[in-house]
Image (cartoon, rainbow, N blue to C red; front, side):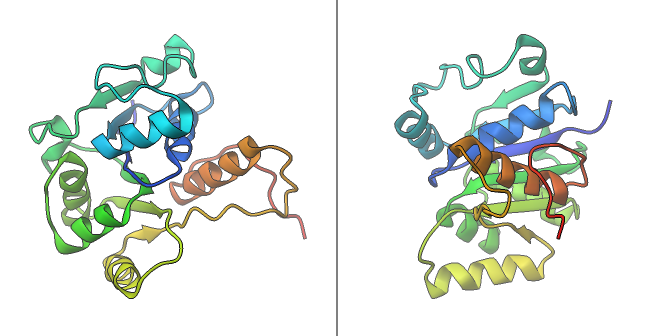
Length: 199
């Protein structure tokens, strides 16, 4: 079994991107074990945008994926700083924070560990594991840009939630798949989520 990929969903708009990434990673094509953390604000945004109840015990993926895929996803509470992957001795391949709020960007840039998501990012940085942040904010302030630049200089992949249109998307799902596919590209994983540019 390959090392898990961790996915964190924070309180920025665009929680559908995070859920689609989890589906793609854990689904029948890739079958990668996934550790999922959703912040409290992320839960509230998911309830507003996707109709998924914000209660901590509410299912996130049950209506979206088959039981086999669901079996490859482990959910961790955002307050659980004793979770296995909060230690650098526990291996994981990468951490993707999607969408990534500017609050989370600021915490990671400053080295704060106020919740499990921040701690996982701190571990990824210190252990030199792949860390991908997908900010979804517009416009960005100078503070936002400085924090993102600071992280980029530390080797963090900054992948804004900016879907393309050259593949002529017909549905919102096409735009979501494009972004999820770009994340998979950065993880070095093959996929068929979007049609690549042919020139």
